[in-house]
Amino acid sequence: MERAEFLAKFGIGVAAVCTGCALASCGSKSSNPTPSGGTGGVTPPAGSGNLFSIDLTSQLLNLGDSVIKSGVIVVRLATGNVTSSFTAVQVACTHQGTTIAYNENQQRFICPLHGSQFSNSGAVLLGPAASPLQQYKVSIDANNLLTVTA
Ligand code: FES
Image 1 (cartoon, rainbow, N blue to C red):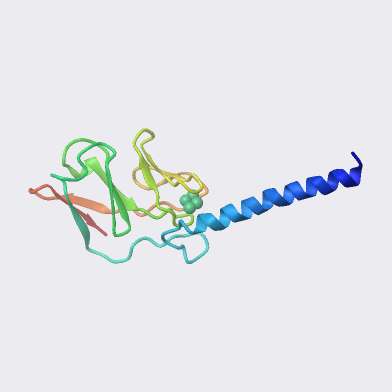
Image 2 (tube, rainbow, N blue to C red; image 1 turned 60 degrees about the horizontal axis):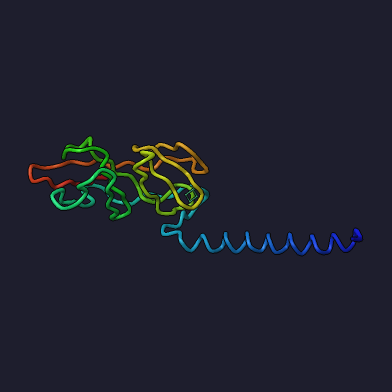
């Protein structure tokens, strides 16, 4: 194979690969439910006071169960209806706003888009995210109603 012929074929291959990368990047933005609106940071849900409540007699019954509401993900970390059995953090990844999920086996939140990982309290364990998730307070009343507070 001549050098010019090789470069021509190789060049086409690189172009095809790069086009694929570009399309993948464009496609991934469509799954972004909460645009960052800035350079890197994602604004957590606004407001203060009680954001919402969850009835623990019918939801979050098992370890690792989660509920996403009002921009917050609430996860059961342990048995018992006490506040230490739950965590509540912003659901939008602080990198580019993708909805994170809780991984019960790894005991952490993982962003499916670029793989950032966060502790149960929202601290960054693995980038590219550089900022922690905002954590929210939870309280539980005598009727097993869990309330998330900003
Ligand atoms: S959006 Fe990039 S790691 Fe979450």
